[in-house]
Image (cartoon, rainbow, N blue to C red; front, side, top):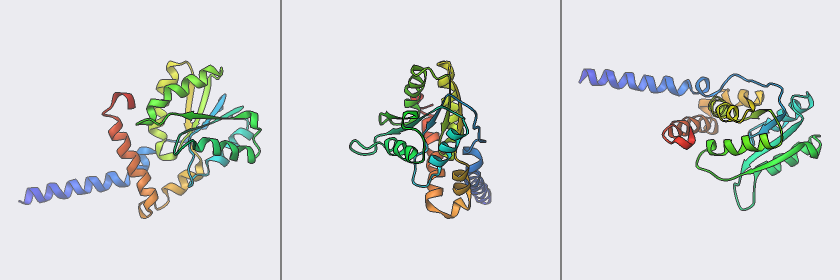
Length: 196
């Protein structure tokens, strides 16, 4: 009985340590490098990524921006609205595109389509702006697929998003939900070849 209690305590301590380590495990170091195109995939009401993407564009980090999104309702693609917002923030309309992606069981399924889109436009490098909690896993998937297509890829996120997301994250429902949800998605994706 005593051994079972000790094992249970160790298991609970391990689960607690893993829970509090989620930000370190999921968020990669920022890697904002110069590229031919910025792929904007961090479209969320809690995000400052639109402003970050505009700053990158103004700094000359890329000449074009592509807003990526899947359909969330009938003919409703958040990327279309992000495109309009970027234009309202001063990016010339001809430099911002919207790529409508199909709704798929996991994001990895769309990565080859995105890579083909980038390659078809003659771009040789891309900077993907993603939510912070998705950065480490996205970097692994994107680099692997894009390299096969001969396209360089890097992954970044808005610094303000990381700061907001990681600040006392375990006390706020939406922050905890995003970390735990991402950890669960990655774990499940590992079981399906099309998602890893």
